[in-house]
Image (cartoon, rainbow, N blue to C red; front, side, top):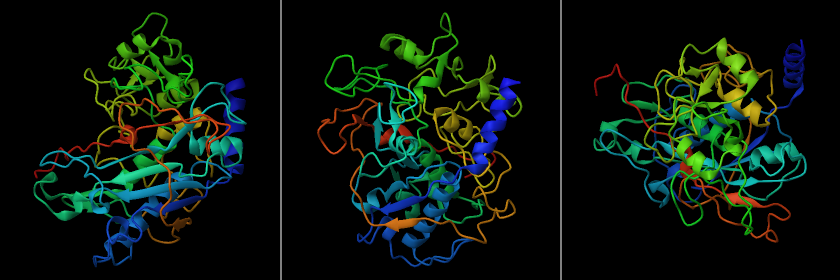
Length: 419
């Protein structure tokens, strides 16, 4: 009965919650490349922009609306976006048979802010803002970068595959759905990522959490990692209860590395037909650590397949919900909006709008677009953090910068397609 009341209260809160507004900061503005590329292109379904940059930006706005319509916040979510080499940066990898489609995540994590549900736990900036009811740092909350080489048509880059910017979720032959990739990266930015170090670096050893001050005892778990449990270890401990050495050993313990939450377990039991271990949803923890993929995704064993698996899957769309991702976001502290449920399936593309509008037609997403903004991280590594002076702009909060590479999304060729 208690669980039933809890579900009912959650549903009522979801109905009353207002979706988070968002602002997209075009980091490519004024460069004539990336999201500012003036190349003339033909309109595609749902996207009537006639330059490559404008078409990309319209697709990005649509992806942002899909995600932010499902979470509640009175503080606009700031999203900084760019394309890689097209904006003078280092090109994301793209070879004949594999590519990094995009990378992204939260720009900062904060602890012990007003309204923090858990003490000494790192929260991604967008979620911290939502919980605090005010902006905690005057910077972008999420930073995303996408692979621009895909639009060159080079046979040496995924054998000529290129981005599809239509809003109907129907990429054609040799096309990759940009919106699905953008949604994946945005969900990382809302907190679907672990900050545990996957590689040794100057700031952290494998298995360590990021350090939030110069004090030796200032390494704290992030909220995502707080739900990670290892069923192969005695007592089935959660990651925050392990030593760094135990977490280092646990990183490769798939399929025994799982997400631990009773409500998510119940939702999975009635929805997933595979990828469940002892009633819990499996996380991606391959025998060989994959920086940018390990831990921060659902396991590829899940069925139905999920948008937050580590590799692009042409059979997974985002026009009728974000699946089990909604459960994880809710567990971490996001209030679901517009009657979004766990799991989020069979819902409207933009939550709160008519469910019949799943082809990109009709009302377009709301949100604002600005020029470039500061913020974000250029640090590399497996999730270790650097120290921010508490007397700097983020006072009185400690903030740990994270590697954007945590949100790397791989690519998997269509199994049924001959390229």
